[in-house]
Image (cartoon, rainbow, N blue to C red; front, side, top):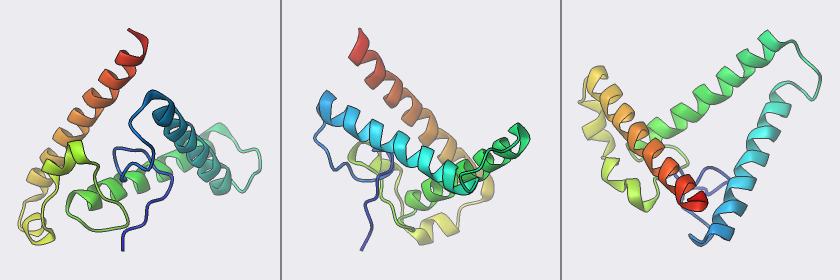
Length: 125
């Protein structure tokens, strides 16, 4: 069974309703989780900027791996409803070349970025 942790709503299934209040709660939880992961990675001690950047890179790399796995229905997370058209069986993913995989991931991220921007814009304008 797939887990639903406090992750961005575009990666995991949304637990809160799609209202602006519910969405702000989800966004706030995502920020808290990201902040907590960063603190855990630096063991709650002050670090040099270069070390902090390295840790951030590792956290983001892990999130990109989670995202990639959700595209082919593996891992702990599933895509939310607006993005399920990018999901494919694992066998179909395996036969794709690395360029095709990268292209699919980039097109997903492009659509995701646009979706997030439009949601943000609708809150303020």
